[in-house]
Length: 526
Image 1 (cartoon, rainbow, N blue to C red):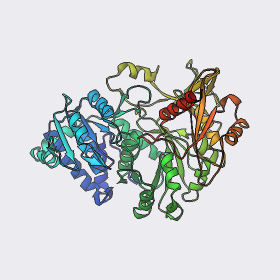
Image 2: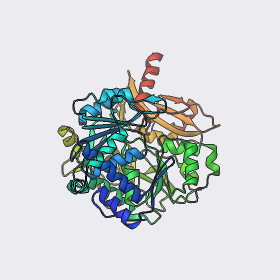
Image 3: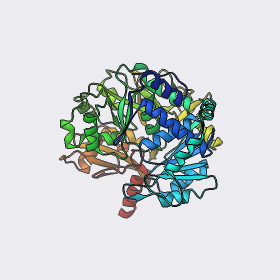
């Protein structure tokens, strides 16, 4: 594994090229690039950006799946100091329009079509924004735009002197990336992330890494920090290889583990569960995999035990868009209990504290808000000074909005999102605690607990449960399981068995949709 030292992504790219020019950097379908080829292609794309009027501080908005073009446009934008903004292919036009109106991109790049959806009408509509000077579409023709080949060819006008001057002008602490939060409560806000945060933050993950360079799949939406930062940037910083996939497919994942000899495998728990449920999981050769990792939610203990049978090293990580990178992770050789019920410990590069509602430091076992202080945190929310001020406590501590507590072993356990917490009859209830207890039942694969309005208690809990294949359990049995282990007020008033949970584009459970379903069911029963 290579340990880069650069403070910009382009500097790190050149470092890796100088050390291992022929090392594989990208696999995207039939296309394969070495680090020497990746650097040359990044230069070509950077020239095209400059030729089309993009410079330091300008925004480049891109609608694409996880594929080579996305990575090249992002790296090229970062190289010349432009600010890249990813647009999700699963978002509707109203959501995309909000992002475009907010960031006012000079350049809009988009994928013509994918998986039965034609994006050209949406791209043409988005290009109507006053700020957009150029629209270019790849993966298909579009009469209203500059052909992508022409867009790239314009870069031939830019000589090396102009390119190198633009690269030299890119500053590590300037915004390089804007990632919009999920917006489950109000309009999404754009978190501004710097190259310093992306390089230093993701490099911290390798402080305790003694294995091979990461060779891993990226099948995540490009408007998510787990795609750009936790997967792609982290892999680049270590001289590893990214295997791009335009959508998640368990069978393809398993075949790719073997075919590409992956060294790192994992993702969101939902993706891992779906892959482990595939028949081919039992026969897949995981011998090349050094580490299995997950984040974004807890993974049930039985699944962790099963993963240990195919890979001796596993790791749970935790981070937010606003922290730029993962800021906690489990140590090697950690106990099964800690893996299932904690988010690990803070890395050395990140200060962490847990405080109560009055800002007082919480001791072991006392729940409070988890906060981080680091120069890798977001620069702030794009054009949202009040929201930025609210995001930080006095002294520069980032408020995560997550409630947790220190364990005796030094790890941190999550109790849930402050925004997910609800009061029922005056009692505070954290859904995550109930979910984890449901998942200790032998028949339960996964569970999600939400709240809805109720006349007597104000709010009550509702659980949606997915059972393991072939398992049987009903509401009464699951409710009893909870009553024997939790305070009675924490037991959901309704428990519904479902085939699957609704998933957002970022891989997390759509709690808003589940809450609406629960509310509708309650209202209909009155």
